[in-house]
Length: 286
Length: 286
Image (tube, rainbow over all chains, first blue to last red; front, top):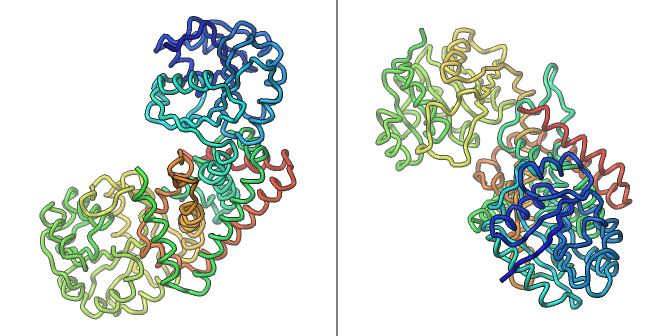
């Protein structure tokens, strides 16, 4: 049976908070400590019963923890791993929920003393609204959670983290850290870059009296919703997964140019063929 | 009081069918005739009470109509206008719901005999699902409907079509046909092209065992939904609004290149600034 005496969540937002709620709902932890920069967020999390106590500084917060969950923006991972590594208990597990893996996994592994077991993870879950007030024990139900173990990953720690996510109702998959970053550059990071670019391209246009965007229906509004994500978080993701993101932007530009050429040359058959191949993809997704 | 004896809807899909439902709900028409290519759709529309009778051929269907609503894909407008123009009653009104205006308006005006009053229109409404089964008298409630009259447009006919859309609950605006096409190239046609390009770029990528897109969360799925629109319809729109669509693709590529350069040069401040300007736009949209 999976059980932790002390769990510390660093970064108690939607994801960290929801995992805390799972730990409570499934009685997987005796005590949950919240750490992180936002004092108000931590207070709110405690009021809501998401965490039991607050120890703002990560290094202090992890001392007694059997399980530490790293859930701040990925840009903060390295700094936090450096400060908590030396303070973690021998035998404790560190896991994370970051949307970039690859070299970051190797980096974090290098910062931890032997005897601290790192299991890199990435639950594919979210909501339009973020923050601990939205945290829910059901957020991960039916979602995929990707674990990206390396040859250094401890088997028992991996099994424990896997069981944890399964308890949350997630479907757990394993993937190489580098493959993870290639996949998510394509299905997540590129769409965000494309949405930011779309909104930048259109936002300044005006008729005599009104912004073009006041006339937007479904299509454009979906882009503004995607582009509403935290600028700092997406900046960090683009920088940390730079090579793959740049490759995917190139690939996207190639595809965009193909459609542009077909429209420019009024090649109706080619335009329809390209559009049809894309619209057929929907049928394959649930 | 607005009232029509005979109304003919050519193309009884979601939009044409919903307008028919408004005409019924508000008792604005004695009889509604449905015309168009899809015999099954027309039968279904009659079963649902959306229309009263079926006369498949547009030229035959418009003979007694005081109001004709053109609601097939825009690619069919010219052909249909050519065939119905000579058959329409003196004093009858022709309106449409097409998402391209500009030169198409001039073209249609040139095809109609004097005494037939054309009022070009474009309701900004839709649903994820299309087809007459989804038609609803409330579809246009709170939506914008843009009318694009020219110096040739009859004032009384314009007033009648305006009242019709207001009866549907729409907020009616007037705009120059060319301005309409510039605005919709930006807020609607470009997002669709971008979504088709995105899905084309990512759809073929695979890990050893699975398509990348099986891992897609919110961002990419929004693109697949936008790209699920009818390939023929969007092909026609791109061809008929070609100049503006190409200009907007250029503008989009410029914006995408700016982000790409910032990521390539690891200019964190620039990336964040670009992302922030886009994410702030959301706050200005309801």
